[in-house]
Image 1: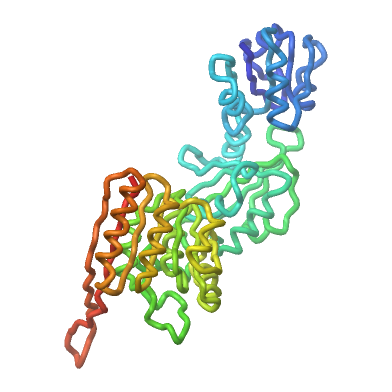
Image 2 (image 1 turned 30 degrees about the vertical axis):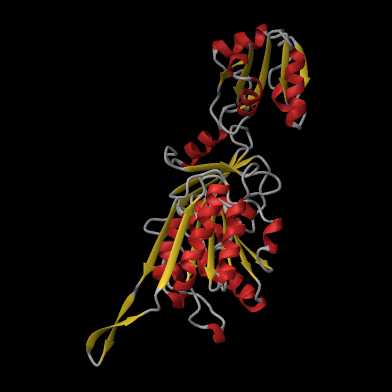
Length: 416
């Protein structure tokens, strides 16, 4: 059994008896140069400096064979550490883990904040754009930064998305003699220079909103139609907010879903789908160049970064897209049925497709077509159909009246 041991910058000075015993008994000691140097000269055993490549690290571990060995790392090996990779690669029976206080624990202790409910992540693993969206609604955040994406990069990315309601701490060289903790506003952090070994802590200011101030009142879905930019000659072709809300509910979008919005127009469905699929991606397929340009403008308006506008004609535009978990198709005429068939063929098992039709003439055709497609895919047809009649209240001559929208039809199908 190979021992994966966490230490601090003080080496073995604060190590437990169990850690000292494992290291003393090891015939092979693995770790980076800095960790091995902290063991001191009195510790015997062959020293193997680990490679920076995880596959080569796995080969180095494999080469140890049955010899008593210890792999030395900093902090908690299971918290965004090497132990997670090795256990997944070789199995739990091969290792034992003896953790030390992690640098994340030290950082929260230094700023005297609890961390039991904080959002914690490593920017070496997760893209900054995804992390920023999760920070938006967090109360406390702990980030392992890296030389490529440091505290200044994080601060700039937050400010660009108008997330300006956190106090930041940058904790450098934790546990070392030259340890430094900087407390500042994001504006100051964005222009600062920090050492590569650091942890960044963000603490939300009291009563701060979870959205930019000019976005208060906006919803995840079902936003008012006039919240979206539309091409002037096509004003009114936007999927109405009430129909949009029903369609998105039937699409059953998960946090990591891949979504297609076929015939996206100016992107109202795409934007709201992206707010639901915060860890996924939405492909907004539109053949009209003017509407295609408005998609990005509406994304900027709602501060969503996971919509990918695709200028092209469906179904040819499907060829280069990843298979979807959810699809929305809207339009009129027989072409909608053909697009729905093509999209259903690409839908992942368990995925959902929603079709929005404005003509009653094509509902039966679309239903029959998707019934046949379901059976051809080897699954029992699971199709729902709705006629949506909406009337919005309005004041006329100091009296309440209702203005009816054009009837709309929704068809939803589950694949398998």
